[in-house]
Image 1 (cartoon, rainbow, N blue to C red):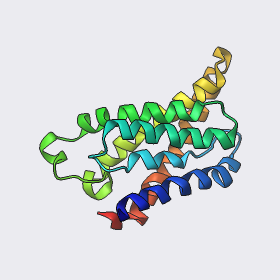
Image 2 (cartoon, rainbow, N blue to C red; image 1 turned 180 degrees about the vertical axis):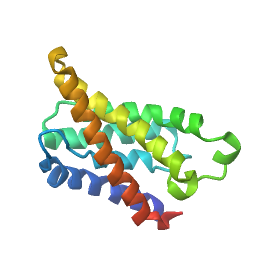
Image 3 (tube, rainbow, N blue to C red; image 1 turned 45 degrees about the vertical axis):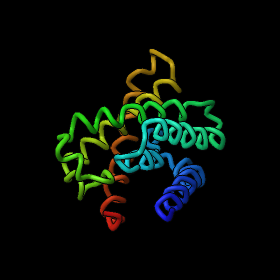
Amino acid sequence: MNKYLKYIFLFFFLIFFQILILNNIEISGYINPYFYIIFILILPIETPKWLLLISGFLLGFGIDIFSNTLGLNAFATVLVSFMRPVIINLLINKNDLENIKIPGIKSFRFLTFFIYSLILILIHNFTLFYFDSMKINEFFQTFTKALSSSVITLVLVILSDFLFSKRY
């Protein structure tokens, strides 16, 4: 039960942290970190797919309610939740996967966790930014925003995993 309470607390903490702090940070008009995606990244491996999708939807919907983004975050996080098992199966050997409980640097190793996080963050940010823009003439500007925000988000995810790696 304690494990579930920890994830419920983390869920609400990340929504409020994103809304109150990170949504107010915009560097050079291009960079906006979307750190809340770490919730999907670090859910236990054995999380059922249906719960993963519902968690992704509720997380994104929580951000959408306070950001007035009309379902963009919900769509992007559900897509990441859907793609997460596919990416894990591509990157991790099935024999090794049986011994891993929670994705992280210590359990996946640094390079694998880096690639795993990078792919899912890129999927999230490119989906979010391109569906928000929907303009062909802003293709490269949107690309730059999505890529730069992905880099900052990835740095935050890696740093937080180093700082809070006691969970293994």
